[in-house]
Length: 78
Image (tube, rainbow, N blue to C red; front, side, top):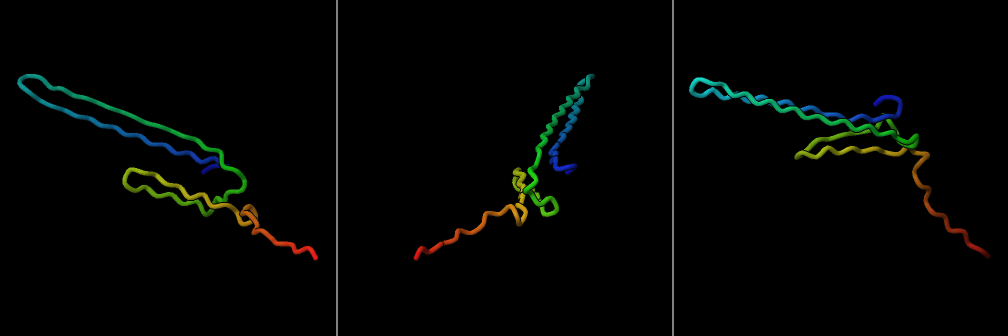
């Protein structure tokens, strides 16, 4: 988090080496991603929560109290 900007990034590096009769074979893989989200002012930044479970990254972005919808009122007409 930086100035109402949420950045999510990941890098994965793999190296595989196999030695056979007189030669060595090496394979390298690299992958990365980066996502940037601009959060609205209605989000409570100090209450953001993230979990990573079974390969799924979940974010909870709670709204500020003043941004929550107000309950409906019933006005009786006499």
